[in-house]
Image 1 (cartoon, rainbow over the protein chains, first blue to last red):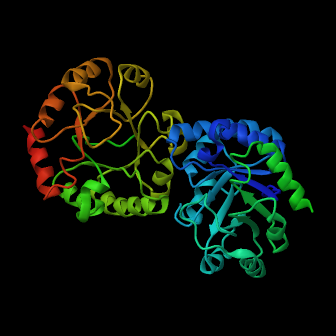
Image 2 (image 1 turned 30 degrees about the horizontal axis):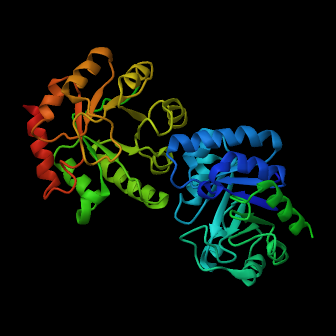
Image 3 (image 1 turned 45 degrees about the vertical axis):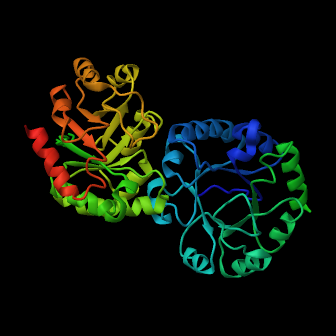
Length: 209
Length: 209
């Protein structure tokens, strides 16, 4: 039995954007503001510091019932006791990640093309990340945006939980849910804002409308 | 029971240095020339391609009885079925890597300071990498060299298998063994040479003297 997860508001971290506030403090404020899932994404940190950060976040988030996912790195997820991983199409293949992490781990998979959506239908992933929904400057190697039309198209062909990511903020989050997504993932709408808590609260209000 | 490994001549790969010959072809030639342990080190490859390269190398090396170790990435070692990992002081802590990979995995650990040598005495690592023995340009963040005197000093205080790395070639490999190392690891003495096989053969002759 897998856990029932509330994917409605999902934070992906960005160390550069978090700046002086730091990743851990940003996450804690965002969770206080209503973020329900956290993905730790680190593309330049060495493995030891990545594990240390993940371990610290896990200790803070577990008592709050907020799952911690690790971007790409199955080793960091194992060492930190995180709840799972989010993998992209150039990360570890899904079946291998599942075999290593076991049936209880949460594993999300990014889909960037229609072909990947079709391919993912046969996988027992916990959710699909629709990437990117809108144009984004946070992820440098992002694919062309799906748009709201793309979200609707994916919703018609799969029963998977769908989380939209890319260019989503308080102004358009509700549109993504109305198009068929179960949740929205944000980076710059929270990381690096003056108040990550206030930013998360604004997103919560937007998606509850 | 752990495997008995011949650490005498140990290759660490460098994709940039291998150039057009490629990592896999360089490794196969080097093994034909006498290399007995291979460490796949990739610092820029995405996870999927890293796993693919490791899986291919494992298939080629396993029938030859040559162990394949993965630099830093426990996830890549698990997914590829490699024999183990080599970890540095900013990678996953040794105890966690051992817990994840199990008792049969080969785990080597780099030591760059006397304090790390002392710390490593209590660990059941398979070998210590003395890093660097001589000045090296291959590893950009290398610590100050141990020198042959450093190798002798480490030999006096630990029973671990010792593999020297850093600035070692056919001209000085025998000195490193005479100072107390059980093997020598090389990068540029093989990767990117006109004939990795001939380079490995020359190193073999040097260490058999």
